[in-house]
Amino acid sequence: MLRGVLGKTFRLAGYTIQYGCIAHCVFEYVGGVVMCSGPSMEPTIQNADIVFAENLSRHFYGIQRGDIVIAKSPSDPKSNICKRVIGLEGDKMLTSSSSSFFKSHSYVPTGHVWLEGDNLQNSTDSRYYGPIPYGLIRGRIFFKIWPLSDFGFLRDSPNGHRFSDD
Amino acid sequence: MAPAQGWARRYIKAFCKGFFVAVPVAVTFLDRVACVARVEGASMQPSLNPGGSHSSDVVLLNHWKVRNLEVRRGDIVSLVTMGHKNRYVKVPRGHIWVEGDHHGHSFDSNSFGPVSLGLLHALATHILWPPERWQRLQSMLPPERLPVQSEDQ
Image (cartoon, rainbow over all chains, first blue to last red):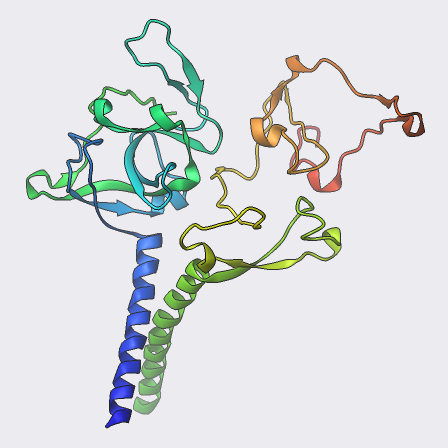
């Protein structure tokens, strides 16, 4: 009787470990479903939307300008942020607000990216904490699952960034 | 014939079953718990690699201990590379690549990239002081830093 229960417990533990490891490998190297919170990417991604993120692009250095990425937050490494890539390494970024008279620029250093939320008035992004290292990027968001009224691939930036393809 | 085919099919089935258990578990262990790595270079001497390139240390990289991102001053840590796309860089025409001799302890082209030749203003040729170190500086390229491919070849 006890042997039966013990055997079943071990088998259950074994299956848990195996499927947990498979889940880790899938989330780490392929992709997964993510729920976003916060207003910084409106109207492209609203609060409590569910999106699909893929992790293949960052391993193959395929992140491009205009991609929406999930990254570890530079101010709180245990939480994630969800922003759009506006500049890659070497790009010249406008750091002063577009309305000020004296415009200041800075270059994105090697190994870094410049992120901005689509909701420019309500987004803490690289305009606040500067460019972030490429290694903080966890994955690329490319598809929205929920709400069903907005099902499909994500739109381009509403802020009129024109990215030249080089 | 039939028993042999049955044997092969059962073998393949067992192999796949083992494969899909072993690979995810091993990958998860190496990503989340610990893995080993060989230390390259002299930037951590004398703690790591005191023997230079003759005997490289092998260290245990402990992921489990930093799962809560808690480190203390003095800990030796391993960092994700900043994500440089290329290990190799092509130095453009009219530019030079400069490096300090103490690789890793030097703010040089590894940090700011190739330098335009127009910025070159002098060559250091001699050590003048202290008198016991009077010498002519030799032009020397460390063999491990030779260009992978150069135009004069």
